[in-house]
Length: 167
Image (cartoon, rainbow, N blue to C red; front, side, top):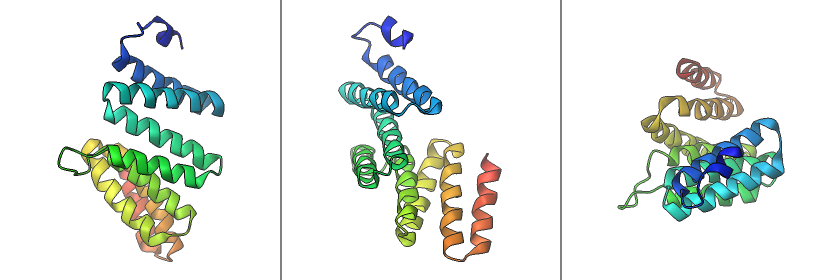
C-alpha cells in the first residue's frame, strides 16, 4: 500500500504490478474484499497501459476469488475475458493464456465436465510451460483430479509425478 502511495500517479506500468502484488498479499491474508479491490485496480491500470500479462494474471486471480465464493459463472466470464486478451496479433494464444486455461480446466472439474477440463488443462499446461515450467504444477494437479474422477489411476499418478517433478 505504501508503494502505491509513493509511486507517482503517472507511473502506471509500475502501479499495475504493485496493485497486483497488493492483491496477492490480501489474498494470502484471507481478506476477500480488499483482494478483489486490488485486483480490479490492477486490471484497470494494466489495461490502461497495455500490460496484457498483468491484466491476464489479475483477471485469473479475480476468477479464483469468484470460485472461492461459489460464483462459478462469474469465474467463467473472467477466464474468458483473460483468454480473449492473451493472444498475439495473429490471434494465437500467448503463453500467459495457459494460466487462464488451467484455471478454466479446474472450473470444468467443479462442473464435472471432465472432457472439457482435460482439453483446457492439456492446452494450458503446454502454453504455461513456455512461460515457465513451474506454472504447470497447478495444471498437473488438476489433471490428476480429472484422471482420478475418470477412474484412470495410472494417469492420475503420472500427472502427480509431473507436478512433483516440476515443483
